[in-house]
Amino acid sequence: MQRIYLDHNATTPVHPAVLETMLPYFGAEFGNPSSAHHFGQRARQAIEQAREAVAATIGARSSEIVFTSGGSEADNTAIFGVVGHALRAHQRSAAPVHLITTAIEHDAVLNTCRALEAQGVSVTYVPVGPDGIVSPGAIRAALCTETALISVMRANNEIGTLQPIEEIGEIAAEAGIVFHTDAVQSVGKVPVDVNRLGVNLLSLSAHKFYGPKGAGALFVRKGVEIDPLLYGGPNERGRRAGTENVAAIVGLGKAAELVRADLSEISAQVSELRDCLEQGLLARIPGARVNGDRARRVPNTSNLMLPGVESESLVIALDLAGLACSAGAACSSGAVDPSHVLTAIGLNPVEARASLRLSVGRTSTREEIDRAIEIIAAAVERQRNVGSSREVAAAQ
Image 1 (cartoon, rainbow, N blue to C red):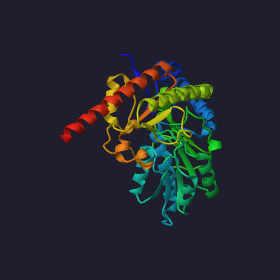
Image 2 (cartoon, rainbow, N blue to C red):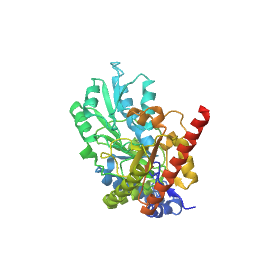
Image 3 (cartoon, rainbow, N blue to C red):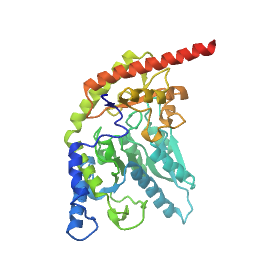
Image 4 (cartoon, rainbow, N blue to C red):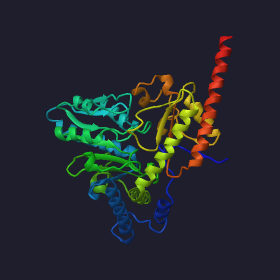
C-alpha cells in the first residue's frame, strides 16, 4: 500500500541533508562541547555554527539563542523564566504577578500558565474571534500594572491562523512588558524576524521544519532577564544546564539553513497543494467548511469541519486506507474533551469532534493530494451512511 502523509504539523520527515550533517556526531565527532581538548572543541565549534544558523534564520544575534530539547521546553523556559524572575523581584513588596495569553495556545503554554496559577500567579486567557485570531485591542485591555509577560503564539497548531504579533509587540513595548511568542508552527512556513515582530522571547522546534526531534531553541533578547528552568553547569551561558545534544543541535542548524534557502519556494508549493486539497474536499463533501480564517494562516494547514462524522474514528479509517492525518494536536491524541482551539472559535462539541486537520509538506505531491481527496471523501460517505443506518435502526 502506498501511504500518504498529511500530518506535517505533528512532525516532519528529517531532510536528507540534515541527516547527513548529523551522522558524524553519532560517531567520530563524539566530544563533549564543554571539554577543553580537541574533541570537545570540535563539538563546541559545531554547536556555535548551528547557533549562528538559527540566529540568522530569525534575525537574531547568536548570543541570543538558547538551545533546548524542543518547543515545550522553550515555552516553559520563557514563561517560568520571566515570571520566576518577576516573583523574586516582587518578594519584598509582595506585589502580585500577572501574565496574559490566549485561549488557543498550545498546551505547552496553557499548562505552564495553569501551573503558575496554582502558585498564585494571575493569568488572563484572552478569547479569540470565530476566525481564530486574537484582537490586539483585547490584549491591550487585559494589561494591568502587575503584568509581567504577554505570551501569544505566532501560528496556531490546529487551524494555522496567524496572530497579529507585530501589533501586539508594539503594545507590549509601549507598556514595557516582556513579550513571548510560540513560533513552533511558523518557523519554516512563513518568514519570522524577531525585530519585525517586536518580540523579546521566541520558541522554535527543529522537528517542525525537517530537523530532528529533541532539539529546539529559545530566542532571548539581550537585556531580558529570565530564571533558568534547569540548574547545573554553566551551559548555554548559564541559561540551560546540561550537556548539549550535539547531533540534534547540528541538525537544527542545518534545518534552519534550509529554511533560509528555500522558504519562498516551499511555501508556494505547499500553499498550492493545500488549496487544491481543500477545494477538492469542499466540492466533494456536502456541508464541509473550513475552520478559522482562510487568508491569515500558514500556507500548509487546513482544518475542516465535516458534519456527520466522528473525527477520531475517521482518522483510524483513513489510516487503514493509507492516509495519515489528525483530528487535532498530536499531543492531544486520544483526549476525551473536544479541541479547546475549536471550541474557542465557537464550534460546539459535536462540530469540534467532527473536524479534521490536514497539513501538507515539502514531500507532498499533486498525485498524493488527488488520491487523498478520493480517500477522505469515500471515508466520510461511509461513516455518514453507517450513522444514518444506526439512526434508522434506533427509530425502529
